[in-house]
Amino acid sequence: MSELDTIGFGLFIIVAAVGGAAVLTWFERRLLGVWQDRYGPNRLGPFGAFQVLADMLKLLNKHDWVPPFADRAVFVFAPTAIVVAMLLSFAVVPFGPDLYILDINIGLLFFLGMTSLAVYSVLLGGLASNNKYALLGGLRSAAQMVSYEVFMGLSLMGVVMLSGSFSLRDIVEAQRDLWFCVPQFIGLFTFMIAGIAESHRLPFDLPEAEHELTAGFHTEYGGMKFAMFMLGEYLGLLLICCMITTLFFGGWLGPWLPPILWFSLKVFALICFFVLLRAAIPRPRYDQLMALGWKVMLPLTLLNLVLTGAIALLLEGV
Amino acid sequence: MMETLFYLAAVVALAATGLALTRANAAHALIYLIVSLLAVAVTFFLMGAPFAAALEIVIYAGAIMVLFVFVIMMLNVGEEGITREREWLSGRNWIVPGLLAALLLLELVIALRHAPTTTAGVDVTPKAVGLTLFGPYVLAVEIASMLLLSGLVGAYHLGRRFIVRRERRGGAS
Image (cartoon, rainbow over the protein chains, first blue to last red):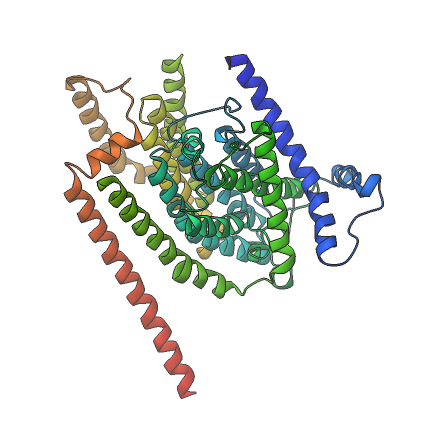
């Protein structure tokens, strides 16, 4: 692609990702309704699809208010950090053999770096609000996200070992014979859990658990600033599904259909699965969440790493 | 083009570091420090060390600084902390650290003038970094891992003692 094409494609991805995240809010509520035996938003337009527009109008009409006791500059900056970090991560996702913005030999590390920067949004939001609940929510999320980041990176190292590259295109190409979800099923499992925890969605949404912390780190936020937090969360969901597709389910690879369609189908199926998780699994207690991270998931990823390394070495020796 | 970008990132890094030093509000200072680290990552990337740039973001900006902010939140210093910090940052307290830093800067400038060659423009791939780390520098890696292990054991010990003491107190009452 020429430079101009790349810029155009980048703009298209931004619009598509933000639009996709907006539609996702409605889609998730409808799907939750199906699985929990209720309707969900079904009034506006066909199947209630215009609910997104109504929500957007409502959020835009809200008074853009900063509490007088808040740290103004940081308060305004915090919600933008997560959206920017998430949108930047989409730059390294290969949507098809030629459909990508950036193909660098540190693609995977770029993704990890951006997700680790997204933590600041929640942290600074909680700190700047100058509110006890927000502070507690921010503290919780910091501990949760840093703990889960540790094995999020480690769980992907098996994939890197098998493909021999950090470039996401090379990783997809390496899955021509066998998708990595088969040899790396432990990695897939741990990465999925870490992904949910990183985007702090239910069942891992303890930073904003409303029954204990009113709304956690975004207690003081309203209007479009609150919408930015929500947008960041849904972009995170979209991004995690794109990454799982790329890393474990062969990205754009598949017979008959065009590559971009395969990619979209896989991402769509994963999103449905994530919504199902939200519908089916109750929220754990906070100490249970941390214990799960450090005492179960981390040893599991280390075991996966050692086994993958040993098997790779054995196969190479033969 | 690359050169302009490099100097731009360098200016951002210097300005952000300066602001990080002079802010009275600890949270603001930390945000500037994060910006400075990101700018340093950009300069690394432009110099042809993408792996170092990625690690700078993942480890320094993404993990260590998060813990710094975490501590700031735990302490929750507030207004009196800011006024105290402002007192510490004023006037005479700058002289000695300023002199020492100037000395280091002078040393750096002299060293750079006598440096034999620059490495700019040579692309260092992640693989090359890995081969060097686990080849000639494997001893350093082992020592670092030993240090981290001792830190881990120490943290475990501290946390454990606290829990046992609390349990005993609970049993007595």
